[in-house]
Image 1 (tube, rainbow, N blue to C red):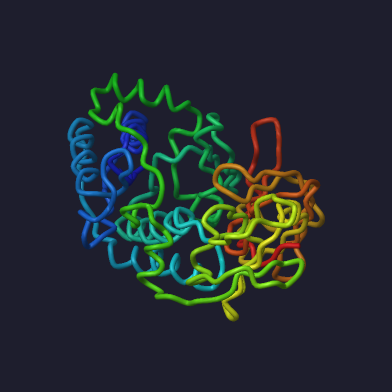
Image 2 (cartoon, rainbow, N blue to C red; image 1 turned 90 degrees about the vertical axis):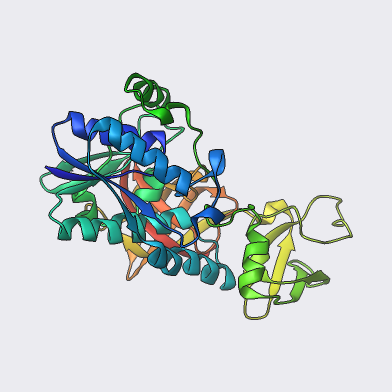
Length: 361
C-alpha cells in the first residue's frame, strides 16, 4: 500500500512510520505546519508542531530513507480548531481541541488530500488498536492504557477509519522508546508534548479574553440565588472548576464552591457544593457510529474526558440524540465535551460510538 505517515516530530509518529516501512508499504512522510507563526507555539517538552518538531521529523524521515514533505495547514487549523475552540467557550461549552484537530485536520483535511494524491492510508503515532472486519472498522483501546488515545479518535467516521493505520496500538510506550533508540532515531528520548499547542503560555483564560474581550456577569449561588461576586466572562470558567473563582466569602458550611453551570446569554456563572456536581444523565448529539447505530438500550462504559471520567451506563438513540443513563454519577461533565461509548470484550474495550454532549442532568 501507499501510506502517508503523519510525522509530528515526536517519537511515536517516527516509530509508526518506521513500522509502516518495515511492513513493506511505500511510505512518504509529511509534517503539518499548523501555524503561520510557528515560533509562537510551545517548544521543547511542551511543544507541538513547531519548527523544532518539523526538523526532528525530517531527520527521522532521512534515517528511515523515505521522502518527506511539509504541508501548510495553518489557515485551516486556525479556522477549524482555534476559532472553534474560542466559539465553544464563548457559548459556555467546554471543547477538546485535540479531538477537533484529529477530526478536522489529521483525518479530514490530511486524509482527503492523501486520497486525492493516490495514497491508500494515513499512518499516525496514536495509541489505539484498529482492525477492519468484513469492511467494518473496529477501534479499540490501546494495550498501554496509560497512553490510550481511542477517546480522541472516536469521532472519526467509518470511512476515515478504513483508511487509517495506528501501528503502535499493541505496544507499550517504553517499548516504542526502546525501538526508536535501536533505530538510532534522535527523538527516542524526546519528552511528550502536552497541553494546548496554540496557547504558548498556558493561560487559557487570558488567551480567550484577548479574543473575546471582557463580558462581565454575576457569580451566583445555585441554591439561594444570592450574587456572590462578579466575573469578566463565562469563558474563564469550566464546569467542576474550584480554584480561581474570585469569591471572597466561604460557603456557609466552610467547604469549597465549584462551578455548576454557565449561562452565556445572561453571563451567569452558578456555583455550589461538590455534592451538586454529580450527573447521572447525559444527552448528546452529532453521533458517529463506526459499526452502525445502537440497536436499542445498550450496556456500555462511557468516557467523558481524554483521561478519566469513566463510568458504566446504559445508552440508547432517541431521534437525533444519544441518551446515556449512568450507573454511577460523574463530576465535571460539561456541554461541549465528547462522550465516547465502549463495549468491554475479550479483546479490550471496543468503541461503539461518540457524540457531543449537549446537556446533563
